[in-house]
Image (tube, rainbow, N blue to C red; front, top):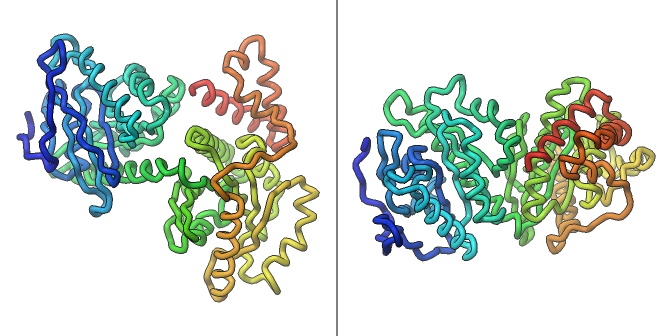
Length: 480
């Protein structure tokens, strides 16, 4: 063993013998409502115990220097993370795939893990599962254990993937995910998040180990926020790059929580005001397709993954279409239809937020009075609007007025946390996308053509872009 056992910070847990083996199973400790419970599971030797120590910043769990397993009981460790603002209870489980002669036979390990996951899920005591895998493992071998985990929680608990042993991966550890993400999706594995890390010790690994600690703690933080989506309305902000989406998030929050720079994936923020809490999602900016097809497709696919994630967790309560007042381009209609018709099937209230009106002559709402007919002629069917500035600048009174306006809009359209289905519209595109994948192949090729045609006619995409987007979404649907 590479590290000696150190005394855990948690109290001793009663244990009992597991029938049919000499393995001792640790009984589940009492649940504390202010504690975020995380089960860490995976193959023997995948680095589960080392991950516990990484999160804790101390040697709390026994680790092994070889590929075999060293965990013979379900260890429980309570730690404080994020500057001691969050108490986390880590369940270090017995390794899977040991074989009949392993430290704990695989059949026994699976039975114990099933019981822990099922019981904790039923009692509401489990908040997150970390599926720990070695970066060098063949991707296809991960599916069996993933299916076992998912079968016990049945979508009620988020599962994240933590890839270990990446201390030598070049150029960046995160590149592992970029290389393997599509394969993971094709194999039907869906995760609520991921972290590419190393738990290696030693002076040369300090930078990457620190990066890994921060990445895992941030993953826990984000999943804790996501766990609240069943209780708080979900508001998705979308629009072109530079429209002011991140600044809008900060305006609503009343503080700078979002970085006002280019983001590569959607970001989630828990915002509280007026006695309520809201999950605000800042999406990747939709660039002009002709200026960068790849970037445009990536942005739409990223938005699609967000909407699908939220649909599994209660749905989207409000869409906010963020529009720069001086950039009324032809692609605005395409962006609007992609989110309203393609991603949300016209079932989610949608409001348009006009930004950069700090220098508007007269009242900011005068902009809407001048331009609302243009929106109507372009078939922008919105439920409400707000004319604002998200820049304090030399007009702080307009900035505060804008915060009041936008917060009232959020409260109005998320009242009682309920979605309101809007009538009308043809949902052929989404209905075709969501049909079983078999119907989109072989003899049903004509249905695939209808998807491309729908994207071309309704969303204004070129045939090339429409085909590539339809192919991407089709693959994502087939993998879920």
